[in-house]
Amino acid sequence: MKSVRKIGVCIMLLVLLGIIPVFAGGAQEKSDDGVVKLQFASWMVAEASGGEEIIPAKIAEWEAAHPGVEVEVVPLGWEETPDKIIQQTIAKNMPDIFTIESLWLGKFEGMPNCVEDLSSYMDAGFTSELIPAYKSGIMNGRTAGLLWSPNPMFIVYNKELAAKAGVSGTPKSLEDWVSQAEKISALGDDIYGLGLQLGIDEYSADFFHILAWMKGADLLDASGKPVVDSAEMADTVDLVKSLVDRKIVPFGEEVRNLRTMFAQGKLGFFIEGPWIAGILDAEGMSRDEWGAAAVPGNVSPCSHLLCMSAQTENKDLAWDLMKYIVSEESLTSEYFKGTGLLPVVAYQYDNAIYNDEPTRIALEAMSNLKNPNVWQSQKKYEIEIAFMEVVQKILLNDDDIGSSLSALNEDIAEIISE
Image 1: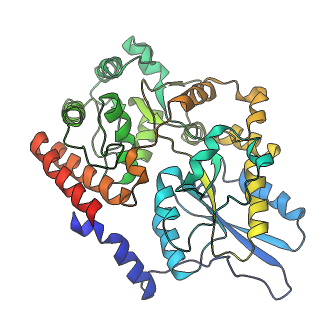
Image 2: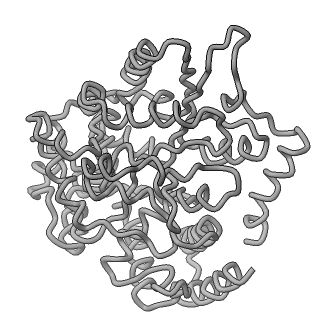
Image 3: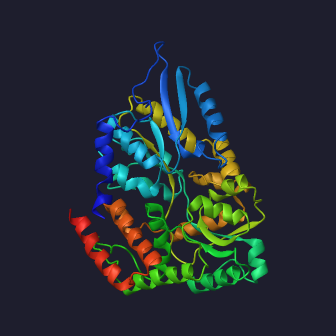
């Protein structure tokens, strides 16, 4: 696990030595004719998710209202974003505005010369128009990110498979959820009841929290002390191992594969957020073929946040564009229609387009949002990777759960103390 902890340091050294390339940033770029250039980087223009055409088109309208300003829209893949932004921060070559997930907020908020504190821009008049979830961009007293899309997690289920299995698709408890997944899995050898992300990455760990909370387990307690060796966590890991061993959960499938399997009718349930609508559209699955249901417990937010580079020379312009992206109703409504992603401005929900079932479920889920305690730690990445490494060993090698989690608890304590 110590090798994992060295990844961030290695990346920084490689960038400084010029071994890892970085793409051109917009922080200090002006053309000879005095045109101000801004750069906006996001995975929402890099993937077939419904936003790749809407966003550039609407940003072009903002440009038209700001003569002398040009915006370069840069596609940046979701998986690439954390390392790429770290590299660019070190190289002082950052995009002026970029998108992050809420689960990465601690990483970037704590990195020197990375994100601008937006508190001075978030005046009372502006924040009064926003839903309370906008505070998910605040950490350690700094507004490190502007909430773009609040994304509470919910259950997505295949209506046809649920009907064939004689289940509701809307579980009322963890036990009910497992029971329904078992019945769907029994429909055929190539059909799985539930998709879980079980890779060695932060995203998998943050989804694992949802199951752990239902069992009363967590990685850290409220004071930041490791508690991964609890009986409740052992019970959670044992449940996941049982589901994998009985082929109710496919093992080794990353999120994009799970989405494809779902669209192909080979997966009954999985956990997603509002963005799934646009993704399944691209997979060729119509919106009346799948349904949304509330997770029977707490869910971690997976919000999209806009960050302003602390290095940009054009902070006022960057803020004006950020505010436009999250609040211009002609943009947010079209963005929702294409992607399923929800707006942050409260009054916009009066629009009838937000009366669909997934939106209703997502809005209800906002009352069950819970930030994992590990998100407050600057060692979040290391702790969650260490956790998923142990989970993988248990799933692959039948390592003893109790002793593995006990050793992990010691390792996490060491990570925190370093």
